Amino acid sequence: MPASALAAGADAPQASPLVVRTVAVDDPGPLLDLVPPDGLAWVRRGDGMVGWGSVARWEFTGPTRFADAAACWRKAVRGAVVRDDVGLAGTGPLAFGSFSFADAGTSVLLVPEVVVGRRDGRAWVTTTSAGGRVPPAVQPRRRGPARGPGPVTFTPGSLGPQAWSAAVARAVDLIDAGALEKVVLARDVVARTERAVDPRWPLGRLAGTYPHCWTFHVDGMLGATPEMLLRLERGLATSRVLAGTIQRTGDDTADLALAASLARSSKDLEEHELAVRSVADALARHCSSTNVPEVPFVLHLPNVMHLATDVAGVLSDGRSALELVAELHPSAAVCGTPTRTATAVIGELEHMDRGRYAGPIGWVDAAGDGEWALALRCAELDPADPTRLRLFAGCGIVAGSDPADELAESEAKLTPMRDALAQARRPST
Image 1 (cartoon, rainbow, N blue to C red):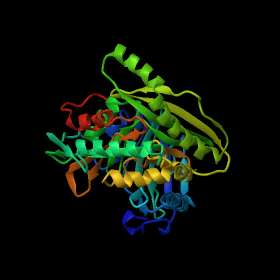
Image 2 (image 1 turned 90 degrees about the horizontal axis):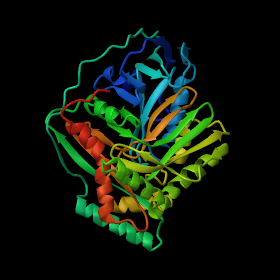
Image 3 (image 1 turned 60 degrees about the horizontal axis):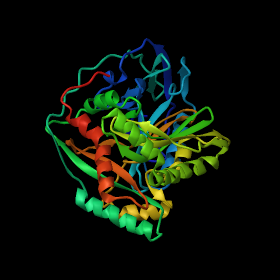
Image 4 (image 1 turned 90 degrees about the vertical axis):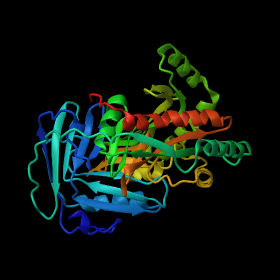
């Protein structure tokens, strides 16, 4: 079942079953040191998975893209020949995916030939093949170091700072007029590098600087996101909701005071409550019970602090992670409230195609479990020009939002990718 032979969408043919083998291996060391430039990555605090090679690739578009992907994946693993000697989340048959924010975009689901993973002190290698062939054994090995992209220049994308601030002001006017409660407005910045970008270069910096985020690379979409849209494991669904942000100063005492002010900010608490409500309501429709903390906590990252809430639910209807993601996306954290109105305002004011920015990105296993984060603090490589990337940042706009403050917040959110590309020396990971 070579990727080139697969039709796009849920009706892709299943000519022969997948043959999948997962075996335990000794600790391979830093996972990002194993991945080739065109490989896949999903790493947090040193654990996670990296992959390479292509057994299958499917593309999806339209409002049914998540359902189509779920059906396609079920078909792919139906009848698969699987030997899994490890039995952890992320072993056995596995697909990585990156979905568009909007219905009109292109989404992708990929099955790699090799996945190397580590979790809770145990490491494994999964090899996958098609056509009834037994996959060859693979021993993880370190790759050569990534070469830096050289000097980087950054220029405004679809809207420059002044025009984007004006869009924020217009959004506040609409909110004040009662058209909607919240809208998330994003902006893009174009990065140009001297040499072709090796994704391992920024990934290593992101993983080293933001270890508590999920560092990812799927089909040219790369970044380090702090927001887990959905984790589904053995019937337990969890989601980390972030909304409400303040920039750090670098002074611990001052940052503690800022964290306290963020936790008391009526504007930020309102924005956060809207985001939590959208996720909790969506999960509640499919869970026998849910837990939604009454008060958010402050998540401290190197560049910013966020109001955060971890929502959990016990799944009652057997839906897969991809099917639940279809219910959750787009949440108020990346779109707004009400969803339909916010989507229309985004289309009117942003003047750009988000592509897969702010869309779900992650992985799914044969049982339908998986992890799907929101593609934030990220960039998308230009498939036609390896020296060009689009960086993205978005801000939640509510009543009382100040355009200058929102612009400063967006700059803070662009910092991880700017630094990951421009940093001259690779930190240890």
